[in-house]
Each structure stands twice: as structure tokens, then as C-alpha cells.
Length: 220
Image: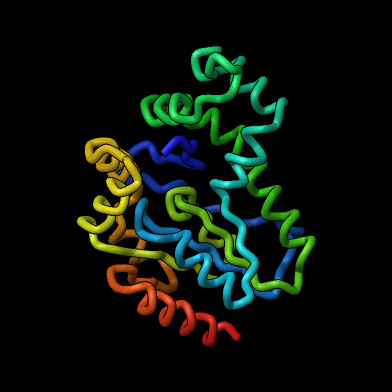
């Protein structure tokens, strides 16, 4: 739980205006957007797609491992948010930044303006590098950010709220914090309704794998 949300919404029911990729956006053989609620198993499903030959790009990992290691980005964050969001060693305290953007709408919008273009540029680089691949891009807040039109299909990984909270607690996330963060996302039933396809992750891994295989066959 120390990651910075790519696009935390202002409220549980807020959705950004739908956007479209620019006219020169690169096309791949297939580009699927994968989303879902916290603790629903997006990464588990993504790995199953990898086993079937998909190339996967995790947007949160791009933010964590690339964008938030860029000295220019860190300098802008320090100027905007101050030294309080950096640890004694000088490393960015992602939890402190996340707490700040969840609490203040203006901070959220500022961070989005800094991060979002860089995330989409990472998508572009991936698609340009391997245009014949079948791509799966993990976007936790895909619908909140209005990005449906950037993908050929959207897939939502879903589970029950009880199991969702149980999985987050098993990762060491306090129950009150887990509930708070889940509440800040679009309700899972609305993500399910908006997605082209839904993967139910309430059962065994084999059940989830069967669903992923079915989608793979449909997209062949």
C-alpha cells in the first residue's frame, strides 16, 4: 500500500469525461484494458494472460518504477508538495503523497497533470515497440479516468466485497484504510456494468484461468 493512485476520483461516484486517443495513436494487434477493484486479483489475472502470450503493461508499476524515479518529476513534486513528502534519505514517501492527493482535490488534479501524460507515453512506447503483439494494459482506475476508448476491449476483475477486504487485510492493510480507499474508487458494480467483459475471481485459480482462456479464444 505505498503506491500513488494513478487517478483517484474526487468521490465514489465521480467519473472523468471520456477521452479518446490522438489520431496518430499507434495500433497493436489487440489492446485490452484490465481493471477492477482493490484486492480483486488484477495482477493474478494479468499473469494468466501472460501465460497465453499477451504482453502486459502495469500502469501502477510504470508510475512507481519509472515516473517516480525521474529526477525531473521528483523535483516538481518537491516544489509543489514540499520536503514533507520525502523521507530522511531523500526518497519519495509514496504513502504521504497518496494521503495528500486523497485529501485535497487540487493536489489530485496537479499530480494527475504531471503523471498522466507520462503514463500514456509509456503505453505509446510499448505499442510502437511491439505492434504485432496482443497487449494487456492494467489500469486500476480505468473507468474513473474515462479511458475506455483507448482500448479494443475492457475487462473488469471482480470479487465479493468481503473477499476483497479479506485479501487486503492479508496483505497487511488495516481494515479501516482498506475500506476508505475502496470507497474512493468507483463502486465495483458500476465497473462491472461498464466493462465489455468481467472475470469473476471468487472461486479457485482454475476457475479464473478457465475464464481467461475463454477470452483468449474469443480474441484469437
